[in-house]
Length: 141
Image (tube, rainbow, N blue to C red; front, side):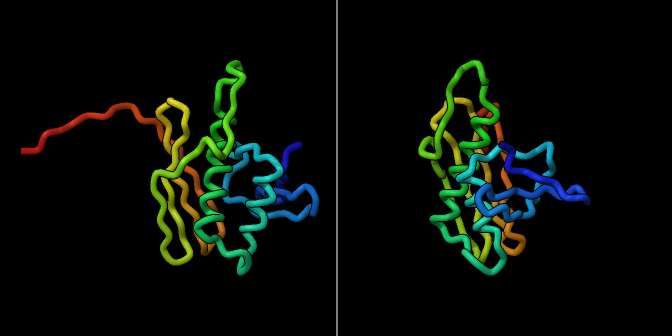
């Protein structure tokens, strides 16, 4: 079951399966991640304006769920492997006022790392996925 719906104007919403409530998502339909029930509920509960403020623990939990969902969505399906949020670790995290940012990676040796930014004003989470191509030492004298 796909937790995403669009309205007549093409806005993308994530839907809580039990309550049927919708929460506007800041991403385009072609970019969405197929979240499981736990993620859709978690995102919906944390995007209500003025309620359930995003604290560090909620942000860390959300980051790990989003990164694991994204990684599983982009893994080679023929490998038959997947990861859980326990396989994701945060390298760095910071909170300024109502905004949060984290750098994350997984225990998979694929060279990927992720930047997650929570915009507390808009109640939106942004995910950037990066691939490490090279690591060079450049001597400055």
